[in-house]
Length: 304
Image (cartoon, rainbow, N blue to C red; front, side, top):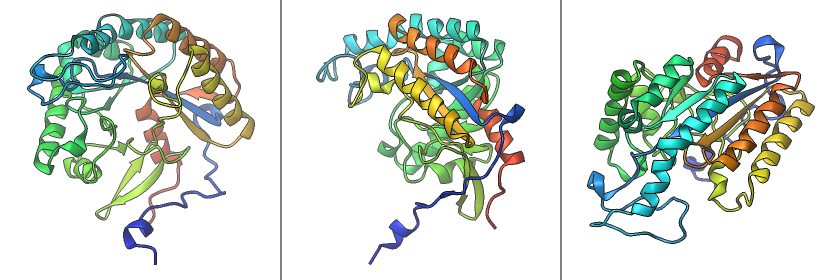
């Protein structure tokens, strides 16, 4: 017998008959470039945490409290001091819209990044008050962190996010908290489809704009990973080429981090991909908020 909890998962989705929804200008493939900015908000003894963030470019575990991990900190500091601006210059030169997925405290620690977002009219994807896993928090603390994040975004960035992508991944209650908060148009935690879709949350519809851990530069660290920036370029290029060949409507989320793709050799891979994709017929670059709004207007409505 299949447990009810398993049956509640939607393993069917659109199936073989995905909705024939054209993107703006009649495009078949929408690319959303997400710039992930978390620097300074990671787990650290400086925040009073009981561990230091270990997901850096150094092999093995670094120093733990009561000592800070200065090596990993330097890796994150590079993203804030240099990497984010290399990516910003690259995006400015390409002239494409982008989405900034930033933790609230990272923006508060470096408000010029929020200034770039506003000046270039990029949109904001909520990414936590800090870059710490929500499943490690109890319900009250996760709710508090969500409220702190929204308040900080409004104060530092001059706007609130319409979408949410949890640090690491969501907890079992995150989606309900987004609906409870009331100001979110969409959830971007799942990596479950090539197209947006609706879910029911306690009787209320919520749009899902799927994220991607595949077209994501975290593979410079995760296994199987990239041995070279050429691996990243090849993955992205083959992905968009195949989506164009298929001719079906699709969303391609390309996520890059300030501390990873902000390195010069890796930035070159992103630059070459943007140049390639910009020359393809039937491809459009969209902000994530615009993807969500377009789907609300042109996609199938929520069930029921």
